[in-house]
Amino acid sequence: MIRELTEKDHSIVMEFLFQNPSINLFIIGDIEAFGYHATFQKLWGEFKNGEVTAVLLKYFESYIFYCQDKDNFDVNGFATIMYSNNKPVTLSGKAELVERFENHPNITLGKKRVTYFAQCGTKRELQATETIKNATIVDIDRIVALQHSIDEFSTTDETKEMLKKAIEFKTGRTYFLENDRGNIISTVSTTAENSQSAMIVGVCTHKDYRNNGYASKLMTALINDVLAEKQYVCLFYDNPEAGKIYKKIGFEDIGLWTMYR
Image (cartoon, rainbow, N blue to C red; front, side):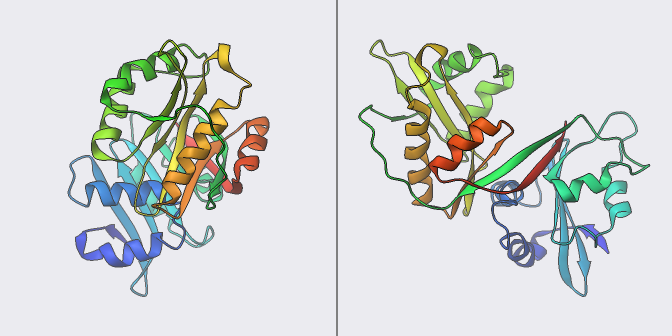
């Protein structure tokens, strides 16, 4: 049976999600931040013998799905919830789970992207002579300017607002390095911070300052600070060369994550 979740379900839902806190960091974070009554968020759960076996989160127009057994959940029921007659469905989740919706006749999924999902749970030795700074709201314009200057980054009008909200609501933080003229030359951020974990995003270095280890130093400092508060730090990557760098820092692959955008 699938039904909408409420606060009465909170303890059993979180117990279910905490069994895999890294994979579920987005769902956990959104429940902790916004609960069950936000106008832009809804949650559904599948129940068997009184136990939660699968969870679907809708955050604005995006869905995230999780269950423990890829062969034992109500694909038709969840597809019916996600049905849209006018545009492709935006869906994310562990690859082996969400890919079961690909050929379902009731929904059309957005463009597919598969990335590696990695986590780190061990602090690293930090040897940094540069002054690493934790961004505040006054630094946002300079951070966005750096991202805008890098081809692989896509900045929009929402970028500033997302950074601002992350700082204000403590769902993310950004560390950065400056050159001697006060220009930001390298940054790394977190998003979806919750009681258990955080996701690293926004790793970038100005093209004139690359190959100096700045991003690795920022990531190490950020990882150590986050792991002083939480169990895991996570990230996505799809570039094997980048993956080698992350693994040197202490990350290990825990699965594939598929996004339909």
